[in-house]
Image (cartoon, rainbow, N blue to C red; front, side, top):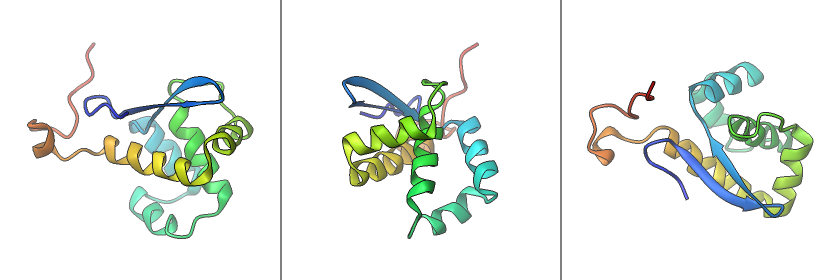
Length: 114
């Protein structure tokens, strides 16, 4: 389930709760890893390589699971299936960029509390 306020998505895999979020740092890491903007990445994701999906998945998990590796991300994907993994990435991206009017706020996401 995704949290509109935090952009986080929680799901179960390999017998544990896993949290995915594409926060600002994750988006920057994705841009660095693939040397392209998020909008360019969207075009590439129409026919992605499996390695790209695994890396994006890992980056989405890294905030709450800082020791995650590509191999572990691949094991999670293997457990839940590639279709579900791709769906979770899409859902987490949508949660990362909510429409301001949908949340009733003037900003896309509220500022982080200090």
